[in-house]
Image (cartoon, rainbow, N blue to C red; front, side, top):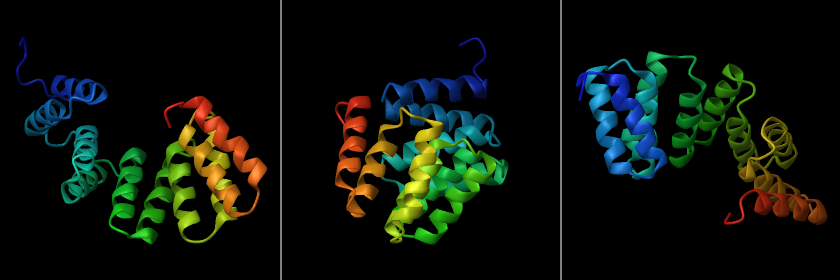
Length: 176
């Protein structure tokens, strides 16, 4: 109201609406932020997240690519681009994106977890375990990593250890 052309305010409002699961409103505010400030890399990334949730994968891919183009060292955009590549079945490209995200931000637990998923899908459960362990080491409260760690252990026949991981995931996120 005070400054209707303030792109950062639209971006921040979009973030808050996104967190409150008001996706249509968040999308509108991200669009306005991009219209006002086309080089706002974080908003392009966040707009991509909204598009991903809406199942608009091509639009999400375009947004993530734009965020990377604007800020090549933006680890979150590389991770998200990996997610979209995975969605398209481009496993090697996804793996490359996750590794780039980790190279840029070594303490990025979600990227380590995502890399673990790719390694598991590529039939390398031992390497996937290393990625999941790293994700858990960085963020012990990442329920997804505990669950995925349990899956990898289960595939290796380590049932009791898998059970411990699954229980930890449920403890951290009871509705998981």
